[in-house]
Amino acid sequence: MAEQPAGLQVTVCISPAPGQVREWQLQLPPGATVADALHAAGLDAAAWPQLAFGIWGRSATLGQTLHDGDRVEGCRALTVDPKEARRQRFASQGARSAGLFARRRPGAKPGY
Image (cartoon, rainbow, N blue to C red; front, side, top):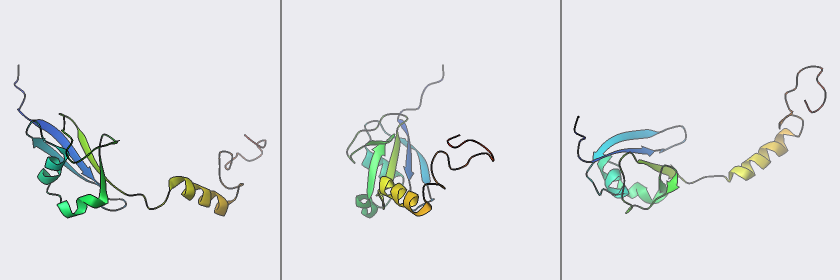
């Protein structure tokens, strides 16, 4: 039986700008925290206040202890509320060109 390496395998993912994702695979000592993972990835501590951190999509603090296989995610704040953006898109496109039945087959009944 092969012996497991001591420590934690952790992934750190950050989205610094729209359309950009940076990812690091890290080996950390047991008991490492989110802040330790960010330091190990070489991320600047000055940028941390602008990001919200989570582990597998659930909110996490910088002092939270990591487990083997965790994925630490750093997310930027939303610039627009998604519900409001959808309302604005729908208002600008109109009811006929947006929604579930916008693309119908030629000659199809309304609503299909």
